[in-house]
Length: 321
Ligand code: DGY
Image 1 (cartoon, protein in one colour):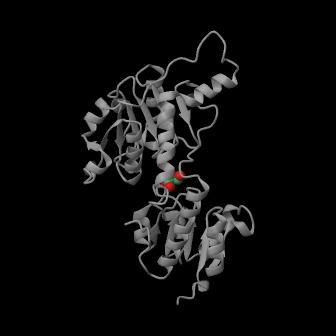
Image 2: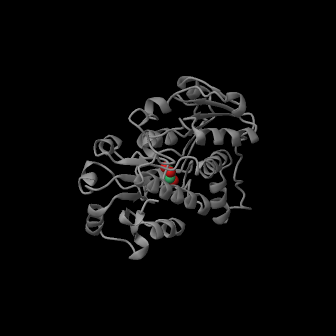
């Protein structure tokens, strides 16, 4: 049985209590729960001692950070996305990287589906309408749009995309998708693979569920957005940088796109005075798709399991290739 107490694990932010308790009894943990938020220079001192890093808070993990952590063997990040991590630099330093796929699929798909419904039925706007005392005034709220019979186009058909497709079937939508590879379970999900141009031309609602990488950065630029139906709604639960924010703003203002509902934005956080938030046809949530108690606990515990496996020299339960 490995003596884990010889290993120092450093956290870059506060972790869920369940994960803290498990790590604290197993390893030498330098976690935030013990002293509140730690200043940057203290974090750097801790990194110098670290065998493993519990990465949370989307910190940039690059050559500069790795140079401060000469003993580091393992980075386990409590998220599925790892676009903040320079994987090549980690490989060059012999540092293993883990993430948390799977456990957040339903939570993220639920929020995506909520944003999809909101982009059709304008629930957030309707709430504002009532809150502002307009219910009962002469001007009615206005009519919204059915999901049933409409086409949902999913860009990025991994586990999350598939879970969104399953939810859309309940709303009697036709689902098409574009992905690096055609999936083998189309018959099960009821979704149909199409090429990217067909998806842009046919979708009434587009959900972005791709990972952010050089080929998806700014994928939805002015040229691509111009190919969407002007009545379409764009829902983004992937990463803000997949969409060109200025192009999106122009399309929403100029009637080239009907609605945008986003859990992720560029920049992030999107501050209250940002021009996108002045528009009536936008809903933004604060990158909270995985933020449920159950899911964040599961993500934190998987992160702990990744750390322990990596320290033991085993393949992590969720290791980034
Ligand atoms: C992830 O895990 O990458 C999500 O964006 C976090 O909410």
